[in-house]
Amino acid sequence: MHQNIDKFFKVSAILFGQLFVDFFGLNYHIIRLYRNELNTFDGISLFSDLVFETREGILLNFEFQDIKLENKHLKKYMDYKICLQCQSGKPVVTVIICTYHIKSDVYIFKETETSILKPIIHYLLDSYDEVKYLTIKNKLINNLKLSHQEIQFLILSPFMVHKNLRLLKIRDVCGLIKEIREKRLFDSDEMYLPLILAINQYVSDEDERNKLIKVITMDMPADEIYEKVMSSGILEQGIEQGIEQGIELGVERGEFDMALKFSQIFGVEEASKISGFSIEELERGKLINR
Image 1 (cartoon, rainbow, N blue to C red):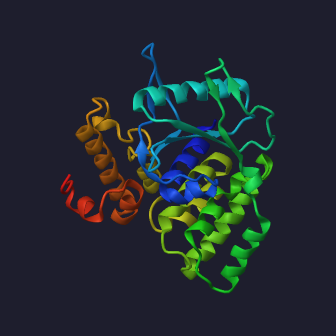
Image 2 (cartoon, rainbow, N blue to C red; image 1 turned 30 degrees about the vertical axis):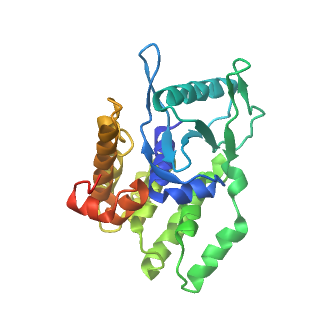
């Protein structure tokens, strides 16, 4: 998968949190990010795309697929699942989000009678709703506030169309976001950030690329906000610190450090919502009564 597309979905999932999970009809409630670096039996490190720990006691392993799904991919995701289960002691549900415009006839990977991967496979093409898209446009005409769910739909919509139409959809969405910002119909500007990655992937003309990114970042330099997202450590480091030892306090400390980094970029309230730590703890920079 192209790196920008991969990170587009990772950033989207982290920013929208539970809404991202709900969008795909998954009946799980996330409580925090889980480490996505997987140690194999032969000492080789693998990296899954994104893992959430849930209140239901399972791990949600998201994989983002921008090419046609084949058995070799399912085999890889099976390896991820086994590693996650061994490391965490928790059951794992694999969710494959396919953005490729041609559906595959591959659904299950069976290695042995007891080693079977039955992932949840979601094709984003099936999520596009023209009525919803027109409803959002109509709300702009009537100066009506937009919800987080509607903004999430807009952000993801360039990947709900045929691959050859993504550039057109990106342009259209950026035009809508410009109007949304000018009319102040949505308050959380950071939710637009994933589009920077889509723009960098599909807009080849430098002048147009800079113009579209400026729509999203406004007065903040595009390279600065892009660098904040990509080098913040949220995706790459996750909750690395403390988890190596597998000690409960260490795990919690590592998760808290990740939440602090997130709060520095996107605010304490958003970090609290995603991580499960209280606003007071994040503001004070230390855990309370734990």
